[in-house]
Length: 126
Image (cartoon, rainbow, N blue to C red):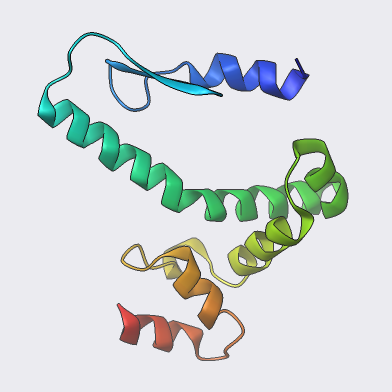
């Protein structure tokens, strides 16, 4: 198992979805019999994680490349498609954190990113 997967296995074992849910690199384990409210919260958190991933990849790639260079190396090292990572990185670079609208998804921001008045378009869409 690669070093990255080993680290992920240790880190993902955390209960980020709640006490009864354990995330692993290849599974989600449900412990006991969670209440419907606990399931709802786990689904809500998982949706939040899913929608945030493109921003996280982009921000992380921007910071890593700024400090050490080579987006291609990052993509190869972490098994990420170079074009997808490049897109995440570029979109993230077009918006400071306060200008990213939580009411709109990454795709909306991606579509508006090349526009000079992108923030106005995003505000209209939200």
